[in-house]
Image 1 (cartoon, rainbow, N blue to C red):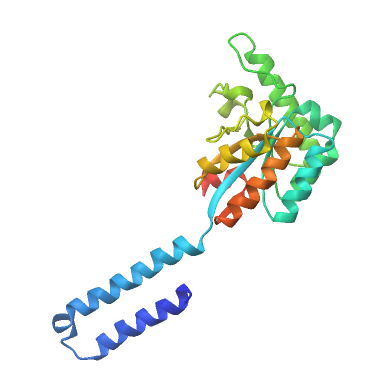
Image 2 (cartoon, one colour):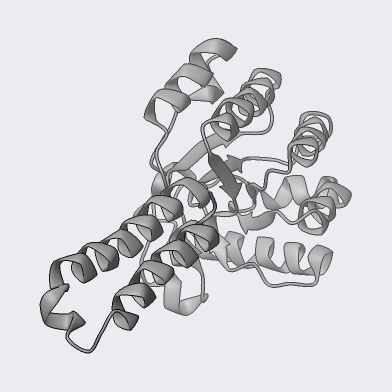
Length: 235
């Protein structure tokens, strides 16, 4: 029975109590309380069953001329959305793949131009790479990127106001970039998967793409919905 039908049943119970007489509040107080609690229980249980658990799959370092296309095909087939934090030099080389990401409903974010890690002495260079990549991506998609995945997680919070950008880190890292063990990558992610998790992967390796699609298949069967990372951050 769906939530609508169960609510109708509960409301019918309440209505019957109300119509049973003017003294129902006193004489049938316990029954009224039970019916009201039943309504709330139905809502809570149905929300848990009906609402999928959201999870975000994110990819760094692309686009790759072959593996990213393979990944996009697989995500489309499965109705799954992802977030791609692309390097400017890769976007410059393969703009058609960046445009496809956006067209198919994925999030396109900034991962610097050359995968530069922010350090003590390269703040301005790092900032210039972000700006250059933003300009490249907005030229391809027509939209200014709002999200950035700083390489290695190194970040300067002042960039958030200076560039109006939101940093996106991660909660699950299977270290797929240093392993070709597809099953191992899949196990690392699926064992740690939980609602609102942000998975870090890379779309420049065959093993990573194969693992990512297996992860989608497994977690979708467990009731997870793959969404872009902004839905995790702000919904």
